[in-house]
Length: 110
Length: 120
Image 1 (cartoon, each protein chain N blue to C red):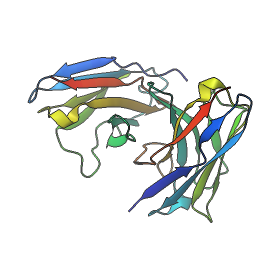
Image 2 (tube, chains in turn purple, brown):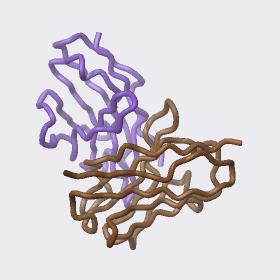
Image 3 (cartoon, helix red, strand yellow):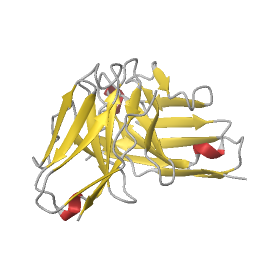
Image 4 (cartoon, rainbow over the protein chains, first blue to last red):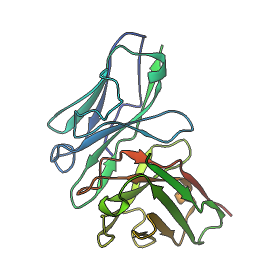
């Protein structure tokens, strides 16, 4: 049950695109297409942003997209907006009803 | 509207016990997996425990195995977390989260969190 690896921080200017990586192993990210992403603003509960690697729940802007290659998943945010500044967490199913999160990435909009 | 409302948090000493509750509404509780996820002050999210739709299957992170017990009452649409032998490192905001029908993820709805502080 080791945490997935995310960069501690990323940044971008309004209108630009940023990508946050999430590296796991062949037992979690690489084994299942059950990667999800969550956005968390300070003092708030996490918000559901992406599921099953690349699917967007209703209400999430299409500026948010997800992908996966081997043991690494990625979240890309295009057309950065000030309100996108937050912490982002990846999450993967790891088999046997076990779940693992990434350490989180702080996104700064310059 | 889906709602998850945690209660039962508080301040207690190391070695103590506490039970968290998560009252839910707005969805068919008895058909979804549910989890507890915690966040220590200034730290990231950590999955703690999950239960399948009927409560027969219960699963735990290694960090809490043997000390915490997850349960649910489908007649009351409520999820519980019994925490025993609490340690300082269990200090965190504890969120309940709604999962899928067949798997514990994704977590599409979250509660507002309950703060548990373990300190002497």
